[in-house]
Amino acid sequence: MQIKALSISEVNQYIKRILVSDPILGHIHVKGEVSNYKFHSSGHMYFTLKDQNSRINCVMFKSNCEKLKFLPNEGMSLICKGYVSIYERDGQYQLYVTDMEPLGLGSLHLAYQQLKDRLDKEGIFDIKYKKQLPYIPRKIAIITSPTGAAIRDIISVIFRRFPKVELYVFPVLVQGEAASTSIANAIDLCNRFSDIDIAIIGRGGGSMEELWAFNEEKVARAIFNSHVPIVSAVGHETDFTIADFVADLRAPTPSAAAELVVPDILNIKDYMNSAKKRLLYFMNIKIKELEQRLYLIENNYFFKYPLNQIYDKQQYIDELLQRLNKYLRTKIEFNERHLMYLGERLNGLSPLSVFSRGYSIVRDEKNQIIKSVDQVRMDRILSIDLIDGEISCRVIKCIKEEKAFVKS
Image (tube, rainbow, N blue to C red):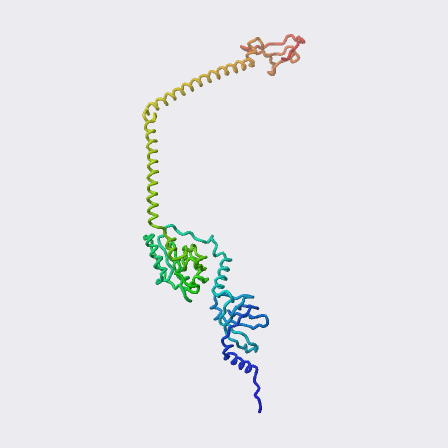
């Protein structure tokens, strides 16, 4: 009997059918430690699961990766769900993973911690990004389920404390696959209304799975990018979500959020009455102070006898004029005496003063002053200047004498 030879592809296909149809290998749970982890640009995930003695190659396709709440990393212990089959091209069997959970810590807790750590490193939780809530808001947005207990609690508390405010309800899904997208879209829509002062997002209590929409990254990003201050009110006081860390203010419950966003109108009325009393008190004090000042002004000598003030000023001006005139006369007399003194000194230096004492000036024909007998000759015509005229004469005799001259 002749045995038919099979091709490699036929052998691999046959083995694949056997593996897939096996009741254990077709639906298997495998636990091990992640090694050689690689997240491909195509969206597929490739890694190896190993224990102390063995290893198996694993692949998780994009469609299943997108459903994961967390990302595995090197050295993490996992329980992988899937089926064992063969990669026909290489003839190697591998585990095709459809879902996975971390060993010990649940997948939701791990996903929560991973996202929290990543956003914290980005600084999204930093207090410097927290916006101030207005003390008395005019318009408040409520982003929650329109049928839950949270919306009733919020509306009841707000209208009890401050009925003057306007409320805008943005109905959203608060749990399920589409909840995070619904909440993020509502936050974006709320920000298109420029006159909304505060937004409350939240829901009543529940399990971690039921509250998971508020742990999604898209909700955290929407809260962080909101220009409207956000108050988170998710679950009970012990429940903490990613939304609580990003929000501008975290309230332990929806009712507490309502109390935080609006003041109590009774307290405001008490404050206004107290402020009114203080204002009236200080106004009365100020009025009395001004009345006292007005009384002092009215009884001031200047206002009671205004003409006397004018007369006093006129008298003062007259005194100033007298002092000025006296000063001017004294100054003029001094200047006159000084001028006479200077005139006398000037006259003392004048040639005319010399003439009055009998002296004269002798000049020759060239009008040059004769200072010595050596400058003249016999029969020369000289002119003599006197105080009252001039004399012309002829030299008939020259006698030179030595005279002592004392320089003063």
